[in-house]
Length: 250
Image (cartoon, rainbow, N blue to C red; front, side, top):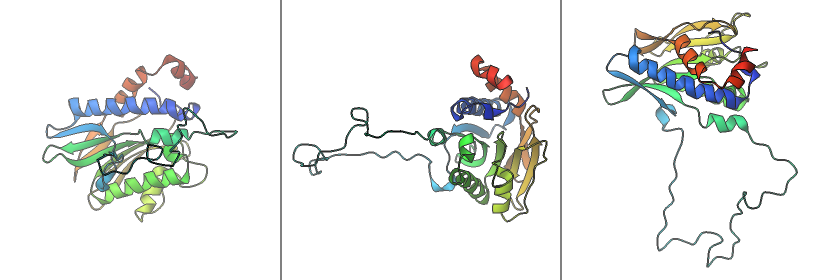
């Protein structure tokens, strides 16, 4: 199965594939790749600083002040957008932000204390849609490595016209290392990082139409498993709607 040119479809279409590929990677790791003492889960992971999504719970008591708009308050209260949309000429929805908020990583944990040992990150169009989002992804990767978590990044999107040559180039330079320039005929990048000192990157450039090789995923210093990218990509592709398969195969 050749790598497809995902720039032909919207962020939402790739997000659907992203979700499916994440689950196929998790399934393959748990069924036949990881040693018995490890397991993989699809999670929202923000690294050592806590969860990506915070759930805020509001409680009310007898001594609480009434909310705006309720009895005893002169304020009119918030207006429901569904009932009374703002009176403006144009409305724009940030599609990339919506999908970034839903993005999952494959997180590999060890059964002893359920500690995180490694992550697999699939780069989405939203990660490259703006300097802010690109920098946030790079900072997350660098923080992950500096805290000793091994990392496998799968980037099937070409680099931006302006900026680093690739996600790996930005990560590597942020770690104080020399720039990386991908081959002109293989601008997409798969890269496995061993976080144990000295940090080591195992880089495989790929191109649209190329075949995905297995990539190493480090579990401990000096030890890794091979992740079946081609088989899991194909399994995720089989479930794609035919309508979008035709667009991507054109």
